[in-house]
Length: 51
Image 1 (spheres, rainbow, N blue to C red):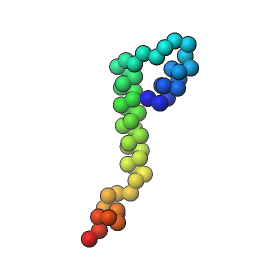
Image 2: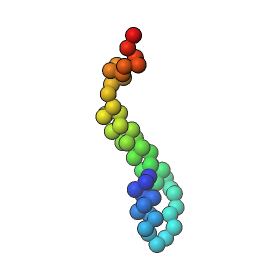
Image 3: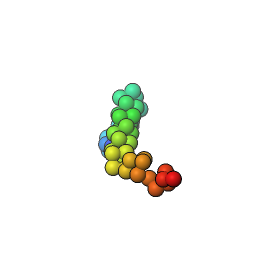
Image 4: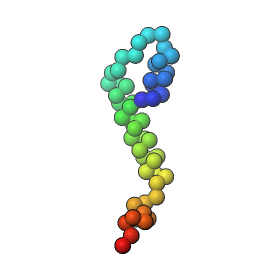
């Protein structure tokens, strides 16, 4: 994820992507999508879907 990229970029040793990093990226992306969808209006309120 972005946070792990920044933190590991500050570490003196090189970053090695592993299963935990992939898992963290997946969870982070899922959380971001959930937050974005929560703050977006429901599809039925979209003006483009009105007859």
